[in-house]
Every structure is written in C-alpha cells, then in structure tokens.
Image (tube, rainbow, N blue to C red; front, side, top):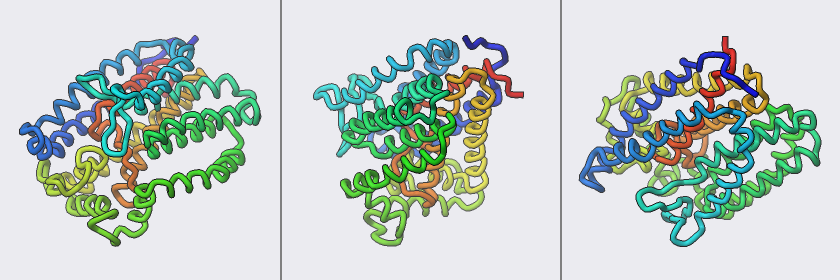
Length: 368
C-alpha cells in the first residue's frame, strides 16, 4: 500500500497554475470575436469554459489528489469498461450527438461531453495495472503482447466509427510508450509498428480529409484556399507575431481567418499576439511539466503509480508536440487540442483530473 511520505510537488502545481491562467487569458482574447458574432457576448466562450471545463476540472483535480492510488488500481478495470461503454453510447439516438461528420459527444441537455477525453486517463489506469501485473512476463507474446494488441484493436473500433483518428493515434502512442517504459524488447515495438503500418495507410486512404491533411503538410503552397487553407493561416498568424507579438487582443487572424482560432489553433493566436519569445516560454513550461511528470514516474516506489505517471506525462507530451508541430508545419495538422490551453470542456476536465492524479502520486515520491 502506498502512503503519503512526502510533500506534493509544488513546482508541478505552480506550472499547472501558470498554464491554466495563460490558457484562460488567451481563450478570452482568441474567442472574443466569435463570441460576439455568435452570441453578442465577447466573453461567451470564456464563461462556458469556466463553467463547464475549469470548475468541474478543478473539482476533479482535488478528488484525484486525495483518492488513494490503491483504490485507483483496484478500480482500473471497471472504470475502463464503464468509459468504453460510454464510447459506444455516442451512437445511441437521442443520447449521442454529432457535429458535421463526427459523432463523438454525449448530450445531457445542459452540457455535452466527449467520453474519449476521460477515456484517455482510464486507459492509462488500465494499462498501468495490466503492465504492473505482468512485469515479470512483459516480453511474453501470449501473456502480454497478444492481449495488448487485442485491447488496442477493441478500442479502435468505436473510436474510428466516431470517427476520431487523431484520438486513436494518441491512444496508440500512449500505449506503445507505456509498453516501452514497462521494459518490452524494442524489437517487438518495431515489429508491431511495421505490421500495423499498412492498416494505418488504409485508414488514411479511406477518408479523403485525412489524406488532404498529409497533402497540405507536404505542399502547403498548393490549393491555399482549399486543403492548405488552415496551415497557411496558422503560418501567417505565427509569422505576424515576430519577436514580441502584435499585443494581447490584437490578433488579426481571429477575425474569421484562422479555423479553430481558440480551439486546436490557439497556439497560433498566442504566437501572433505575444511573439516568439513568449511562446518559447510557454513551450518551455509545457516541457517542464512533462519532465516533472516523468521524474515523478522514475522515482515512484510503486509500480502501478510509476506507469500511471509515465502514461499521463506521455499523453501530455504527445499532444503538445503534435498540436504545436502542426501549427509550425513540422507535423500534419490533426485536430488534437493543446492541453490546458485549447477551448473544450471535456478536454479541460480530463486534463485536470489527470494532473490531480500526477500530483497525488508525487506525495509518495521522493523527488530530491
């Protein structure tokens, strides 16, 4: 049984607080035009994020902070099953809700919720227990590797039907990353990637918009008003910021030029308004948070807690790299939100709950 031997990681808590404040400030700036245009209220999206993202997220942060990690471990499998059922529930008429081609939300009247976001956390709990119980047989094909493949395949079915290919890729990256840190032979990881590559290629070809994202990444100068429009506008926003930015509130791209200006593209607006120096600080804060999480994982005395901390750190790390990389045209744009910054109540709630768990684990970890 793990016990609280040390103080919580106050450095990590400060990092979380700073990123939350930065996210809310820039959400207010980036969403003001859209809020006034749609609802005659420049603060509409900020208030929505505070009410349905920040406040319940902080509540779950403290719940996760005080719950015993042993209780999380005991409940990991049942939590995984419950949220997996919620992934299927998005297809139930009247309960599930769709926007455009996506069917990813559960509608509860006053608010809607994306179960895939909290599923990421419970998936980490499930894998942490899975790997901890099989630590001495981590390279056994029938005991560990084959069940892992079947679990990923099972998850992929409802996620792809939503469709949410980018979320599936995050789950796969988390899974493979945790498997690697659990001690699997790297050769097995490489073999699994090689075997799964044709499947990923087929999935990319099935939906034209997925292929369009790759084409716009490869040649953004082609079709600038079509498939390359998003990346072109993001690059314009980032380039316009220069070293010191145009000033808070003075973004031009948020005036209906940059898609998802306060959602997945929030980083581009931050770069436009504050410039290279400030965005470098923001990126550094994210990587300090991820480094701190991995340090907590490395020094954790409990195997389950170690895997949970590493999984949460990988989750944040992958999403930060993929989101910012897409805005800088280092990676294809995927629609993955920037943790604690992008608009979205479900993501904010899940992120804060996960960070509450991470700070919780730090209480029983000697960081030095």
